[in-house]
Length: 271
Image 1 (cartoon, rainbow, N blue to C red):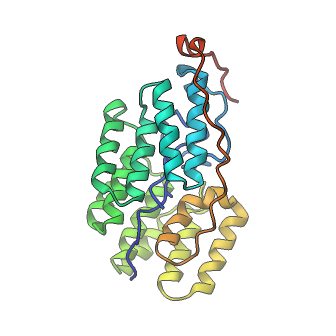
Image 2 (tube, rainbow, N blue to C red):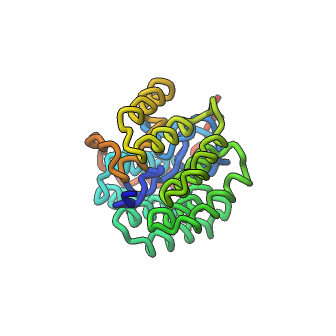
Image 3 (tube, one colour):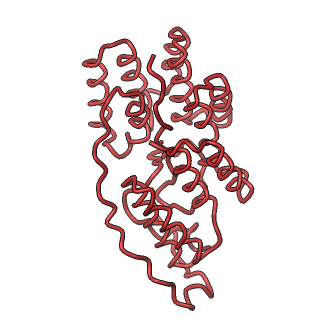
């Protein structure tokens, strides 16, 4: 079977590993949340997590995420530097730097940055997940599987981790266990995991037309954005073609006003 050419995207893309952020890019959240996305497509809403940070910083991180989604690594790094001048690095910004390092195949740098994120928040799921992804994209399937299975034990509803467990078997050509692992993915579920696992199975067995049928069903039910983190695996394996990234259209971040740094702006809870 064809090996990964690059790091899985997520992703938070899972191309490089995704930032793995939900709608709120500064929030650490439990895995398995319905509608979980690695990268939000819109600026983050005002949420309880954001009230801990200056408004200028929340805005800056939103622009970082848009640049990352556009796969513009130089601009993303520039915006990260600007964000770090507003507020000291957070797990999200460190994990974003890790994602870019992994995208560029700088796996040691990526792992180091993930570890720095975990020093700030030992439970930060995105960085933990990305450490497991580093094992996967380097072909260390048994090590990756052990890490992903730990996520499943911690939260049996973690469909993304279950999908990754399946991939480790599939990429080892262990089709019996791969097939069994598909059956362990919830169906119907909160994510396109089941559909993308079946699509991957078909592509791996040279049945591309059947694979595309599964992908079509996933996109029809969940939409392309919620499928993105799963699609990235197939992009990197060469089974489907990655669409051209949309322009980030990021506006320059102006220096924050002194008042913005003195005290966080209060936010209301999101419904």
